[in-house]
Image (cartoon, rainbow, N blue to C red; front, side, top):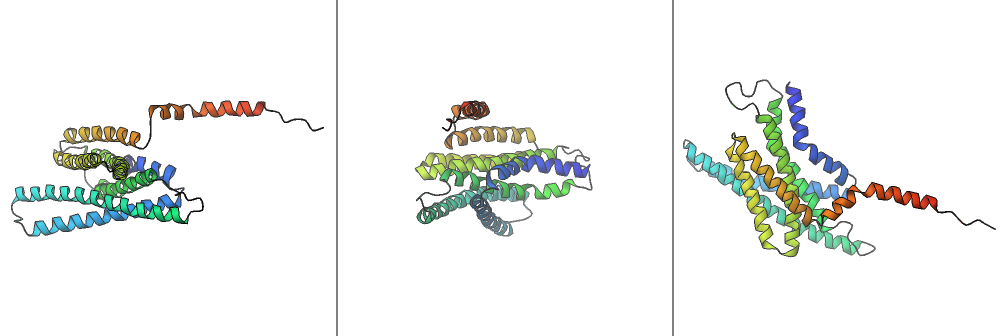
Length: 265
């Protein structure tokens, strides 16, 4: 039973991210480099946030439970702000790198666009964030022990997995919107990204009331995903074109097969 819970929750949490990596990132060495570098930037932001929270806890009264809960919320807010600050720093670094790639390229074009960089960097932030948020939970899911035996919710592991999946996707969407806002100097979009990140982080403090946290977070994920889709240049026309591409290809094959080469005299 423990192994089934472990693998089930793992694939729920990281299944979409794994599919995105295999289909859109793994085949391009440059995207893989951006993915790994983005994870490093997120780790540095986590290190600084942990250091701030650690110092604040040791300077406060550990016996005051209400104060410690407040410091935990403070640490979560600082972590969100540092993540977005390092996302901006990563954007600046990628812009400089892109200018260098344009300089050394033969045709004067960058081999990767800013939108592709935004997508890959957001995915890297999401994957590493998901790993650090759920790795201990997955380790405990193997056993021994039974969740809910003392009256707690038996849905702890499954809700944690779905929450991690939402966070991974949200970081991917936030990265797309954030880079576009930085490129166009659209500050209200930056503010909305940071605000939605803070709201998502704050909603997790409503656990173990999972209905009050998971449903709003998935609503934010859906709305942010639609926003990121249109920000990246998507449209309903492109969706319809994608769905009908196979039929068009078959029509092209029929047309080309009908062509005949002129006979040689």
